[in-house]
Image (cartoon, rainbow, N blue to C red; front, side, top):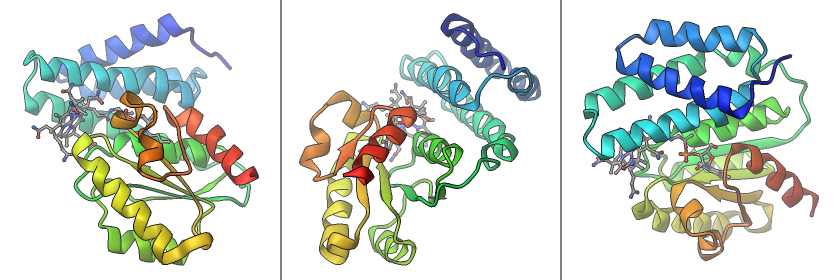
Length: 221
Ligand code: B12
């Protein structure tokens, strides 16, 4: 199994962005799937290729070098390529642990929490991924039904941090001790390192890889 070096992965991320900005999503698909067939681990692909590629796209968009339409095209294409990987992601042996993963209501950035859910899935967890913009009421009912070991909550926009806090408060009020451990993450939590404590979470992780290890320590406590 080959595991590309950091610089090779950075080059691949750049090539992916260039290919997508040239409007060639089929070529981008081949570029990535070929590397995966050659042995590039999906975890490395996510964190060292897709994540930096998306951050780059965000920067280009922020500085008006690309249009909103180009950003949407690139984002949709990366999600399409991610979808091609599930036959590999779902193959792992189960470990009996369950994760619920969601964005809060109003939060439309869903790829980060999707990566988090996929990392847990690849470690053998049964994952329930709800994506963007999930209302508090529905999440409470879902968590009650599923009774997960860990609840992963994501916000990319700082204006959604208050909703993270509301959701956690409701989980604690309604489910008390029975609620699983609550992990938060996303851009505002990466910028302000103690913010997770202010929203009354049990833990925080900087990325999808660290999320799995922090969850492991939380449920061992
Ligand atoms: C794609 C994108 C969108 C898409 C999202 C589509 C989708 N289906 O997800 C759309 C077009 C909807 C969008 C909308 C907006 N966006 Co936007 N978007 C992005 C972009 C380019 C990529 C996001 C992404 O997928 N990143 C890659 C993932 C993998 O990274 P990540 O989210 O950080 O996740 C990792 C970690 O944070 C962590 N993590 C994340 N969640 C969790 C949860 C837990 C529990 C744990 C442990 C860890 C964890 O693990 C993840 C994997 O390692 C970013 C650029 C950026 N820097 O991210 C801008 C960005 C986030 N957006 C931005 C903005 C401004 C907006 C809008 C306000 C634009 C507008 N004017 O409408 C809206 C807000 C929408 C809303 N209400 O949520 C800004 C935010 C700036 C700021 N100061 O906060 C950014 C940074 C772009 C920029 N440089 O200006 N956006």
